[in-house]
Length: 168
Image (cartoon, rainbow, N blue to C red; front, side, top):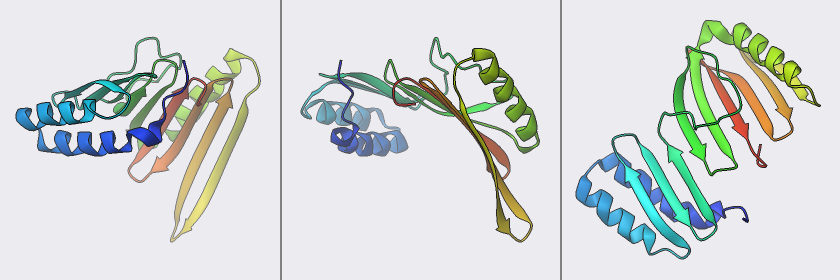
């Protein structure tokens, strides 16, 4: 199966966001029907209860939104995080979470240990940016074979993104 042409689906995303914001059943159904008439789109499902958008195309399917970590997600994610967004196209998956700001060092140690235990080659990096005024932003990254994780200071929290698949 070829990769999904995300550029072709930008109007789909815009329409879905408008519907999710409106949270009205009639608008939801109408938007699904309009999007399904787009070239290559077979089925659209907008779930305003979970915030999840599912699209099936002639090239594959994917889900955006929701707060459930995809089944079989191969990267362990420490307890205490709040799932902010999910992308799942089958082979490619991405989960974004936030954690309390004081867990930065704990999260870095967790992913350092996990990536080392996986073996193979990993590109690892840690950077601290001075933002001036006593503020700094720390970032840590791990990129392996079809797996990538990033931890970043995000103001009052820590943002963690884990991605798997050929796009990682």
